[in-house]
Amino acid sequence: MIRATTLLLDANVLIDYYKSTLAILEHASKSIGQLAVLRDVLEEVDELTDADCESMGMEIIDVERELLLEASELIAGLSDQDRLCLVVCKGNGWICVTNDRALQKQCQAQGVTTMFGLRLMIDLVAAGAINSASAMNIALEIQKSNPLHINDKVISKFRRDLRERGS
Image (cartoon, rainbow, N blue to C red):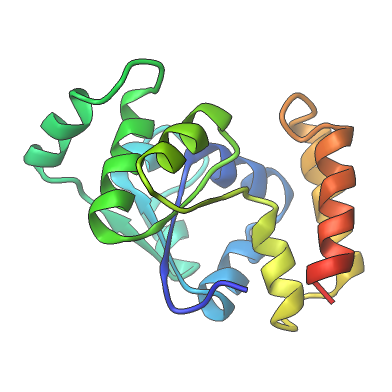
């Protein structure tokens, strides 16, 4: 289980939890570590406001101009927001929480720790903040709204990981 670190959330994770239950993010900020989102990423998620994030205990990060320039020089294949996530996580030793495989691959190539969005719930079960049945129900709800990325294979792996690490 991850503790006492900052977890930087990508837009896809915010959207998945927005469409299922934002309470998971509030639980994560209390039980796992500081949650953060880049303002540039938050602006991609029309449904969430600064006040929503702050009420969940999530820090909103405004990126400095130098980081914007550094991010723009990174490899192609990532959006500007994904590049910023990589640079901010690398510079601060943070964990990048994303379901985007291209971003995960580039983070790992640069020594940045990553985790999938569903992993938050495994850590919450391990911390006793939610139970396994709730986590599984939420994962299935996320799958309904995002079947392309949270497919049956992802759900099967989540179920296995939940049994192995979550309890």
